[in-house]
Image (tube, rainbow, N blue to C red):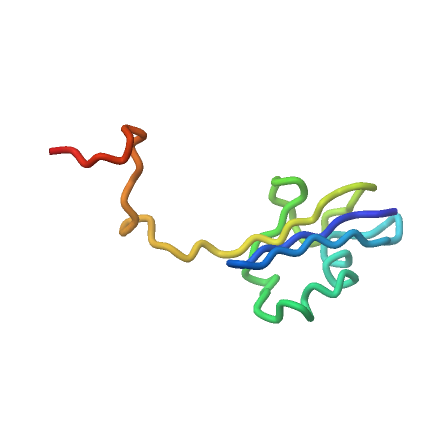
Length: 93
C-alpha cells in the first residue's frame, strides 16, 4: 500500500510517498522513508507524530493513503510572544 511521510523545518519541507506492507505501523513507515537520515535532528522519542493532523502513537497501524506527519517541538515561549487580539494589530492605549 502507499502512504506519505511529511516533515517540515524552517525553510525546508519534505513529503515522500512510499510503498509499505499492509501491516505497516507509523514507526515502520518513518524508518522506511529514509527521512531520519535526511533530518538527523528528528528525535522520535521526544517529537509527536500524527496521521492527517491527529496525534497517534508510533505503533499505530496505517491504512492505504495515510499521511504520517512528524511534528517539530514548539520553539517559542507563549509567555513572551505577544498575543494577537484580532483588532488589526494596534496596541491598546
